[in-house]
Image 1 (spheres, helix red, strand yellow):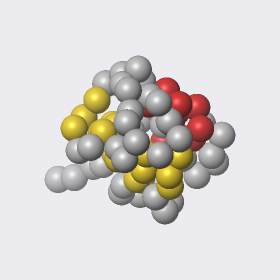
Image 2 (cartoon, rainbow, N blue to C red; image 1 turned 120 degrees about the vertical axis):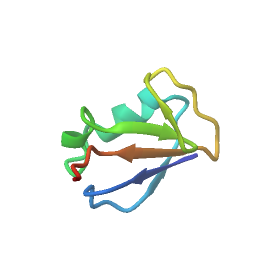
Image 3 (cartoon, one colour; image 1 turned 60 degrees about the horizontal axis):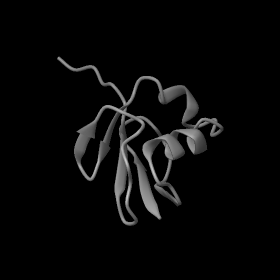
Image 4 (cartoon, rainbow, N blue to C red; image 1 turned 60 degrees about the vertical axis):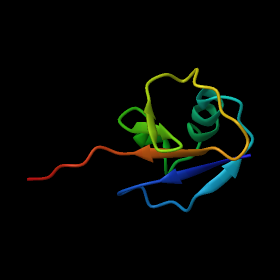
Length: 73
C-alpha cells in the first residue's frame, strides 16, 4: 500500500491504495471527480522528492504527494 496525500486547494483526505508505479496511481485517480481536474497541472513527489515520470516505481509504505500550482506574490 502507498499513501496518497493531496496538498493545497485539493480538498481530499489522504487515501491508501495498492500501486506498483505512479501510472497505477494516475489510473486510479483519473476517475475521481475531486482529483481528476488537478492531475495534469500538479507536480508529484514520492517520499518528498519531486519526480517527472509516471514510470516511477513505488514500494509499499511510499508517500505520494500531489502538489497543485499556487500563485503568490
